[in-house]
Structures are given as C-alpha cells and as structure tokens.
Amino acid sequence: MRTVDRYYAAINAKDWPRVWALGGKNLDPSYPQMVNGYAHTAHDLSFLTALTAGHESLYLLAYETDGLAQLYHGSLTVHDGTIVAGAQRLDYTDTNRSFDALAGYWSAHDAAVQITPGGLGIISYRTFDNCTEISSGCDHRVGDEIIPGGITIFRLTGGEGVEATGRILWSTTSHRRAITLTAHADNDTIALSLFHGSLFCGKHAPVWACGA
Image (cartoon, rainbow, N blue to C red; front, side, top):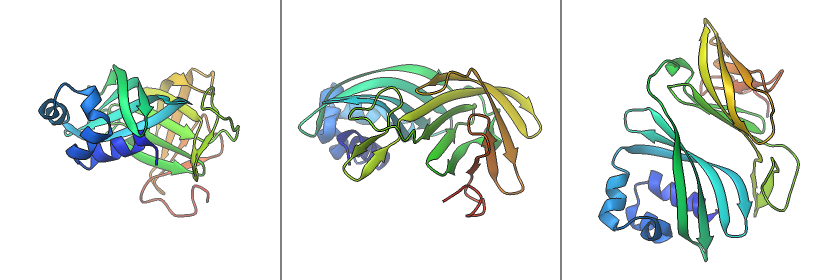
C-alpha cells in the first residue's frame, strides 16, 4: 500500500499517532492542532490524478460528521515512506442535500462513482492505457495494485423524476461538458451518460447487474 493510502487509512481509523508518524508531523504545526483539525471529519476518500517520483497529485473527498462533503485538490511529496510536504485548496462544499437519494457508492466493472448529498460526483475507472507514470488518464500498477487512470468529476444541478442532469467540472479523459444520470429504483442501479450501456450498482443491487 502506498504511503498516501496508509496516511488516509489512518485518518479514517482515527489512529492519530500513525497519522502523525506518516506525515502529520510535517503538515501540521503540532499534534493537538492536527487532531483538532479532523474533529468534524468522518471519512476521507482520495483520488490519485498524477504520480511521479516522490510526488502525488490528488483530489480528496472529505465527508463531514453531518454527512455533507468537501472536495479538495492538492499534492503531497513522499520521501522514505513519509509525507514531507503538501498543499491543498478547497474546490467545493456541499450546501444542501438535494441529491440525498443518489448519494453513496456505486460500482461497475472496472469503474466506480461516489456521489455526495449535494450532488458532487467522482467517477474512477480503468482506461486500459498503461504508463510508467500516472498522467493524462493512464492506468498505473503499484505492486499488485492497479490504480485507475480515469477520473471524472461532475456536479448534478437539476432534473426531475428518475433523471438528474449536471455538468462535468474536470476529467482526465472526457471532453464532454454535460452529464445525465438515470436511477433505476427497482434494482438499485444508476446509468451515467458517459458510460453508455453500463450500470452502476448500489449495495442492494443484484450481484449480476453491473458486470463481474
């Protein structure tokens, strides 16, 4: 497991000594300030967008204790298994729960999408274009792990009934600007216009519905 993955896993486990050892000591002024900084954080999800020697760019989806989420874009520098430097900016904050019915994790074969209550969505997917470094939508192998090179971030802005519409904010592979999401409540699946013919399954969907 990569150092950055271990770092966020420790944050999610509230293992503050491990967070401090893996890089918190280099990112925060003091141990108490680090711990207090995560007082309202329930869960962090990181999405790698670029990987070069010792340097990782990523988007971070931070779920707060009230269930709403914030999206950060940043970079981390890793040396000898420890994060030694980092920077991030806040790109988006949920301000409502307009899309609560669609919120959560949806999976498909070689792809997954996370949707927040406010309608922010992040799709990660294999591109099957392998590179020695992650950039421009290339998959990358780290040990036995394959890191998807496809990342698309969108925001739902409207819709009615079972169909929601929105716009793509950023993507490693797509040049489209609009996105449509169709929900199928009968089998707990959704369809995204970027993936024609594919379904994404919720936790109650039949095991056969979304591929192997």
